[in-house]
Length: 425
Ligand SMILES: [Zn+2]
Image (cartoon, rainbow, N blue to C red):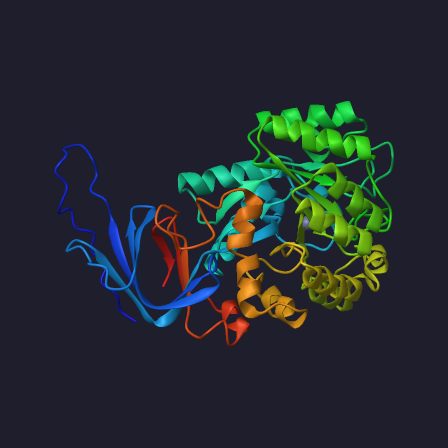
């Protein structure tokens, strides 16, 4: 397809101001997750980084570049609420972090960010990096335009108990870790507050705490609970002083419920959530951010011998339990967001989770809402992202088929615009 892209300077009368770049997108079909409807024959006017107007029969300014997506389905940029873009090249074992310098990990992360954006995810909530603050640096270079990637909201580090789910474990006790590999460790309400104060000062956008053991951590038991109720409450309270929301990693029923009672914005994984947990999530309005696809990658990598044996042991049966609980929680009316744990599966393949969300109970529109309007709500940025509306960032993607008839068309995104700039066409 050939498109005309000419950003004329017409209309600029104030000297010293750059003329606005105006783009008019012709959308054959336009998915509006806010109303759960699909509009036809729409025109989207984009002025610089923002959406100016959306509607049928809107007048196109003479200086506008035209993007013709009249034969495609246009959607707001997708949002993955659970990624780890700053961990470098993928590897099944966190211990490989010890074989790399921080610079190596940072530079290896550059293609992760590009793959994420080019697959249609224009925003991510990145929920922790092994090397503390690598994600902050990645966010900032993307925002400066130095490298290509999605808009990132970052956690900075894992807030974890010593030897817990977010700690780098598996080493002899006499090994001293450098600061950036144990930055988020805390073992009392006041230590939790201290580490959150440091993270807020270092410019993070939200806080990631771990309230149960993990699958992909050595010496961990996903069925355990980590942190006390008091420590989790301290985390949510301290984070609120800086306007930050908290997400909690939790697999075990008690770890999930403790986090919900403490007031976290979302529970990540939520694998073994029980009936009481589902009721609590509904009552508190807590999002569940359930990564129900990545089991496929853990098992596949396991067959290839790329996953440590203890991780596969932790994982046994949890995949199916999580998928069944996804259906149960969703049917019960719990708020669901789209999060994949990107990094477990290769970067750029997050959209494969949509088909599983549909298989386990959602309509295609509901799965799209989880990754757009609901995700934006969870992030606290509904006025900026999550739908194609005037005033929001011009984060716009397109697919050639109809994702409401076949959700898997989202695995092949053909057009990507982020903040008014085209990255894929
Ligand atoms: Zn994760």
